[in-house]
Image (cartoon, rainbow, N blue to C red):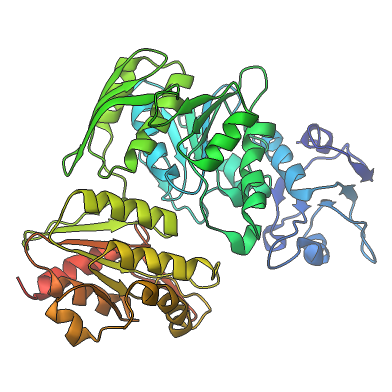
Length: 502
């Protein structure tokens, strides 16, 4: 592709060299550069791509797109831009033939609920015959084509290639989880969104965003900049405080919530261990739903999903049938079969708000006891650790603190931070032998996650509910020494087979 075509949609350029040359590929990793490629120098959190320009040129980069003039090195053509990430997003769309043009595209953003909503929308769009592809936390997929998801929302160049591949395979619509990092880094700027969904905003990612205001503004980028003003449609959960704020900023939005003042609200709903059923009021008329999703917090996810489907002008019948056809979401209150006459659930809840929502939903089911295994990730916002711990201890009869993904941090230091929240609810820490007595409420700390899971299985009694929170669908654990295979679901099944009290 000619460089002039590649740069057609890029803003504020200073070009040194010819634009009448062919670009054979695009990369932001200098190690992947081949002769004839264009290199985009991106400023990252850990490293700066400008430091690798000479390496890219040495590998054959014909074009360098960067934010500052080159010194001591020279490319055939240098393109200076204000924002390399945004330029790459627009150029990637051009390079891959603008793959989202003409597709029905829904972007879902918010702290919690994104993955569940994308699974529900995928089922509805399938029922509508719209052949959906999905890009999100668990994987990138279209039909039987499943690809690993290293990021919730990939870099723009990778995103456009994924969508281009799916489009060529027959995808007619697209549902994307759009993370705050991705929005702040302009990864989705080349996507033609038709509908944007806002789920909620709660304490998370402040290691990156520093404060909630910056976190909120990153989400706002989707609705202010990426949805077309003439026919862009926004769906907002107004049960959330930040959702209410966003709704005042976007008065034409379609609102959903539990109160009748919302455009989409429940007229009657029943929540049980069998799922969620009832009637939902919408601008298209009432919709009778029957979902296998567990937990009252999933009501909000269902309302947001219905809102997105209404915004796409799908019929009430299609929406209801799609929701009924939707299978469980991997690692989202995923049930583990057992012979203990107990409920065992694996969930991705890894923020305080997500854990609170799950535990409140489990309390409403009135089990004999709630046992919760949880941990906090390393190299992430330390301020949420005691908050999560306090929520776990308050909502459980027995809270079992363990390692999540410690990354480069000392697991014991993470658990010390966690203890700060646990002691607010329970003054003293139980030993394992004290916890095994099961008298009253308390907490125990078991650093090894496998040991913590086996301990909890040994503790289970008839009528108990065990929640293993934090990792959900993840099949790995990230340690200082690297990534190892670890799947909570597999470990639970092994622990059940190994025996324990019944």
